[in-house]
Image 1 (cartoon, rainbow, N blue to C red):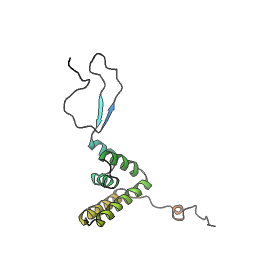
Image 2: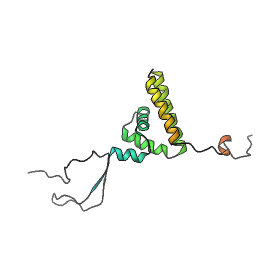
Image 3: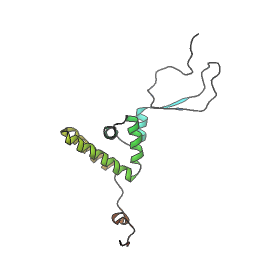
Length: 140
């Protein structure tokens, strides 16, 4: 008895995320009318609002796979606090590269930090944020 698969087998880009749309259930080994929407690596990279080098720095620091780094980076880049965390992460990578004597990699990371700061500027600090409280509030 031959096994039939409920999907087409032509060559496609390797999906990182597969989203199935609603459709009828399979009946008697007939192909489903459901269509699959695939997000490729390039789609995920475009959605995360970070460069490949920034994703590589996250992977290096956190020791996680590329797709996880894209997701984590996207989460962080959405807020000023998260962008500060990303800056600190790249700085940590710079210090680690310098500590092991990899000055070429440290220089690449410094350029990356400069580009990241240029592409993701932090908002100007408000008067409240400098003192840690409302303007005019006095300490004990």
